[in-house]
Length: 391
Image (cartoon, rainbow, N blue to C red; front, side, top):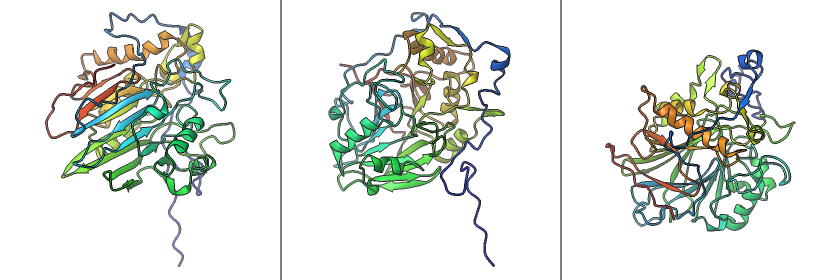
């Protein structure tokens, strides 16, 4: 008797892994009550910087934490938008492993450099000025996360000395950049792989984890490739250094918080460091450029986490230290760049929210583009965090 094939996972929209979906009831734009009962646009907020004890995020010259010890710490340098260069702890005589998440160096997040969302904040350095890195990790194929000129330049710079990781459905795109298949790794949600680039570097574990979002670079490839978040772990004598990059994601479903994040926290947490989006990026930057704002985040809560929801996600995944991302770089105005930071601070100041700044145990905050956050790998205590001085 023939044994029937098992059904595809719930996030697969067909049997051939060429179409994908969020397996939860994500609130659609048309389902939002705001569309029916409230005009979606309002005048931009005037953010009082002194009241929120904050300043505008700026670009600083990176030093990548070179003046601090590499052992027992994770170093994360924000290179703009959702891009981070993460250095895992140095182990003995081995060189530290570095991972570049969602690199985006182009001036516009678009299929060309004449139209589309334009950068407000430039990259902190040239690609050539980054410390040596071994892995490039992509969360999904939207233009502000997967940039052809950036990937093309990385491959031309590093040749066979770099490995690209992405969710299902991306291999053909990377091959079109001239990258050989043996340097491209595709994973499905909850798939993992152990990789060691060479004998000079420690082995790493990469886990492709869920996100609530979408994909597509034009009208006819919507959700034809998978979107994801990522977990990276490095083990040494029973101590595990753990990192989480959320990619681009919403948090709310029609029935409440997306259950994927609590599951990620349970299966893979806690995390020493997490990078979590706190804004919608640049897709609607034109609204703020006109002096307007969305009256509510309800329209986009299914696809983009608000600062309030980012804090909830931070708690769900059990992060010890979290950095906000996906804001300011492609903002349409100074007001839009400040608003998510002000909302993050305001949410943390609520009586029932015990979340400090990113360097505090259990904290969540933001850094300048080019700044390096240094966090210790958990050793069972709640030791302090080193902050690298800006040049």
